[in-house]
Length: 349
Image (tube, rainbow, N blue to C red; front, side, top):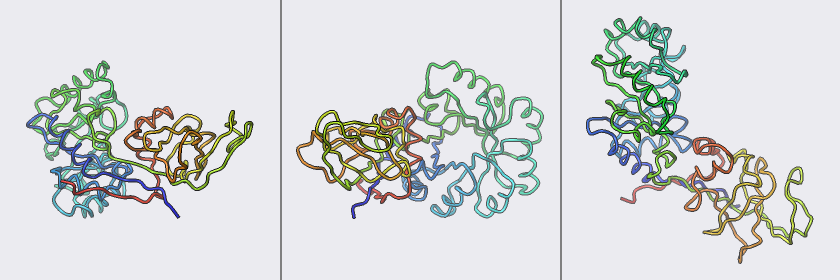
């Protein structure tokens, strides 16, 4: 039986990292964010490809993700944990030499008491109100924390994808106010911040979505393709309906292809009656609702019955597909399920 195949281009991911590295200021280190299983594409394989491309520092969301990356890379590369030092993480952080980005007074206390001398970083909140210490908290403990020699001080931009947004300059000013005069490497920018220009780069940048071919890095190479096999073809007469709730009705004699894939595979229910699949360079609209395992597609206009249809590929990026569901490419990528056969492409020079 044919199986839906997700092709992941490791060479393109490496090329995107090198491109973002070139965009970062000359004296700025470029890290790589491989959280959420490298945005759904396989943290172990992706991290190894990025390490071969030159990345020496990696960021993950939690200690458990750090364990996967450490197993893949071995000793040497630095692996930083955005969620910091959570209760129960101490042994993992120590045994695997992870670097937690401490977000609160509680985390600072936990880390310095349980792992004195172990590397750590600090995350500050400059206006996103998500993770990190606010100015008053940081001012109260900065002198004490700096004696323990953090390896990095970072913050995160809320609106970097919108270059003209006033929040970008406000957060930049706040980051300067909270960190100027401190002799510790600093980091403010992920992909969007890199594109805002050198004043946002500081000592280290942390590209994430741009590595995987997503916006706002318009120059990025696409990194994924997804082909869905056709399970069945059927002919519909005028007036017949398709799928749950009869959400699409044939207005002319139609040929409908049922393909393997659905919302259990990360292909959002909202794509029904909105998105298209592709037969080469010919678009074929989804008709009816996306169900858990199946999608129905109008292929009446094709000269030949298709054996498979592409939902991601040269004609449709993750951001194109996301737009059809009123979401973002991040959600499409990270939602790609585990039932696909994954084919990794690398070694093309």
